[in-house]
Image (tube, rainbow, N blue to C red; front, side, top):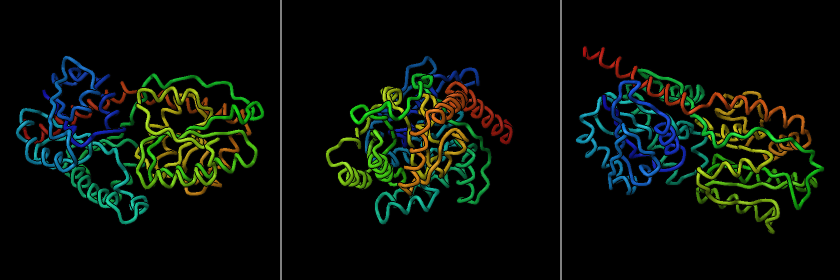
Length: 383
């Protein structure tokens, strides 16, 4: 059997990392797939390791803008995919007519109106509304839909109000390079303003990530004479970056303790996790929270948003706060900072919990689901 993968609408971030890790550890022949064909742009295909069963097809249209990629998927792709037995759509929307296909929900933002409203009247709001209709239609037509958390599944089904034919929960895994046993937790008086306690926040600078509120919270700690600093890492949505920079200039014009480092390649991020003392995550809209699981694996004590799917991932292994309230964020961080014992307990438990997020298990469950969907489809067709 042949599995086709349409990578036309994944081009950066978690979607690319998911596909690369999935195919890195998968063994499709064990599930009856003797060949996997991926159609994608050059940047995506370069991320995929070579395998004997993997065929990578570069499509120049997919190196271009969104409209070109949509055109390719709608009008060109159908001629290329005809010999496949099953199609996988990792980008969440599909405009073609090939059946059967499986897709995955990796973007919850189009299904949460409160979060979309943060963008005001903008292209980003319009884009998310378009994605809502595209993804809703795709999920309803698919023979199988993969969700990363129960929260995401419930949220999507509540909004689209349609029965989805076959669904499964398969969380992402964590690459072993992030794993590091927890360090001995030091008292705050062992840090100085020249060698402060290092807090880390890795995520795209975006309207629902609330980095500016975290910056204000850190300034509260600094004004309490606590020797702390924070590093923000991630690509940026320009209006959100302006909000963050405004807060940084307001509270720390000399750049002593509020730092933004821009985007760092995913393959190098483990160094940042391993040199941090505390991890903070203030997102109010997450399908899964891959970054949080990486921090768990890195043995870090975590202060986290109390919204979206985060409690499903972390359970009781973090301190939670309201990401819209800098004082709430500061309160959780103060609790962690003042108690090495609490930091140790949370970090140990989170590290243990992180072990369930394994890419081999993710790949096994995913290809098992592909096989089951294909078998069920063939039964319905009488094949």
